[in-house]
Length: 395
Ligand SMILES: Cc1ncc(COP(=O)(O)O)c(C=O)c1O
Image (cartoon, rainbow, N blue to C red; front, side, top):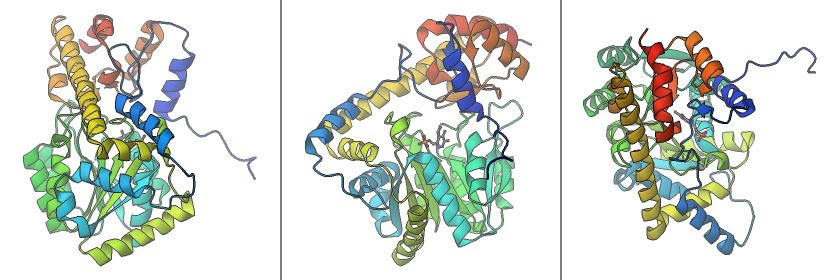
């Protein structure tokens, strides 16, 4: 069976993680993998998550199966967090299903599209999160690209993006990130979201929104504003949600897929097909992370504490963005775009050979694409990182 298999190419992000772990230098700095780190370089369990774990330990009275859609209380709460007041307005047309993380939400969404319309293509931003193309191709969908970044990789090519979206045939799907764009930090402004919505309504493509960083850009509602603008206007939409970053639940594999269709009966029929796909793939999602999120979002004291800690994480990222831009400015380099972008990532325009040298000679890890995780930085690193980057960026 397996003799003919050759090793698969290493995932660029997980491969870099492994190299970092094996690097014996105590002062190495990981700015590659997309996890949040606090001022002490740790990825802590959030306070509200700890409290919810204690509550769950005391309250849980059974390990019986939960069902293919996962935890109903989580599904309601996470749908409301994402959609805000629209969750009530659209209640009959929206269904939410818990998934093992945002990645599985994307995979289940792609499987659903493939079932509904086997020839449908999916349009991804150029560039997008590396895993997007792999996940949707694994579901049998063909990938196309729409322009997103300008040649400097620091701003949006809004006109080119909109022109490409206007040409997307009806029945194809277009994936957009809600905020904190991975890998660039370049988000879609409100006026452009309005045009995207208009284009989707006129052209008939299905928008898929990937929201993996709600609350880590400008705020919980602010980061969902584009999504909500679209959801209020389009007939159909898929929304992939991740609790990995904003609840710090990475390994607990906690996420959801929300489905919006034109009518209640259509949503129920679509969910039944979706859940059949879930049953065939992994049967049902794991309970733990969703049980924590449900408790956090439905108990006011926990929710306040979580939102407060999340605001602190957001402020830390902003502080690191400002700090790196300042340190580089002091060395004669203008990277003010770092301050204006949002979320954990931005591009540094450093050649790939220099990124390898940075890793080997200085123990500073970035992705080969030049993506830097600003949430991996801390005050104690800024001077060293800026000094190491200065000659590379000045080229
Ligand atoms: C843009 C984007 N979407 C989705 C995900 C999925 O996250 P997870 O499967 O860990 O919930 C990530 C994680 O890095 C991401 O960056």
